[in-house]
Amino acid sequence: MFFGEYEHTIDDKGRLTIPARFRDEFAAGVVLARGLEGQVDVYPREGWRVNVESRLAELDPLSREARDLRRFFYAGMSDCEPDKQGRVLVPPTLARRAALGRDVTVTGVYDHLEIWDRPAWAERLEGIEGRAVDVAERLADKR
Image (tube, rainbow, N blue to C red; front, side):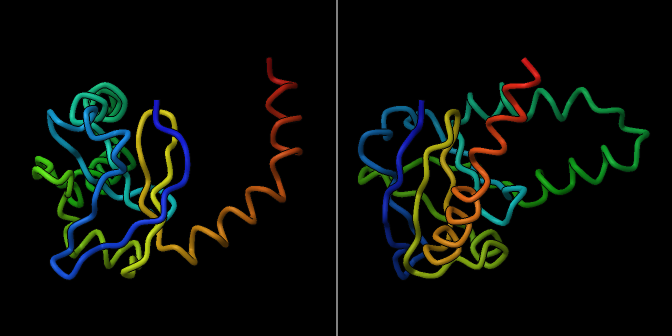
């Protein structure tokens, strides 16, 4: 399980160091992909297959929305191996789309990590904190 917030930097070569506590889970490979809310998602390769790829595969290829969703994820996806220091290359196209600067926040989100530009994460978190009680109550009503 991935959790916590970690302040990191992207080096001049576009590499990000995966938080040390999670490196073993990424040893078999890393998938970086566009996040739905402007961040970069980071999945262990097997986690990507189970949690994203399998769901995209079930979509009807004759549906325009399904094709667009597949394009959104697969066109921006990168599959790589961490180096010996636990670094992964954040492709320039993903970094630009997420407006990532040098200073980023890596957040744990249960089955994957997210990379946010640090000021964007602070703003996003403020909005989440302002709505958390209401969202929790609505979701509790659905049980």
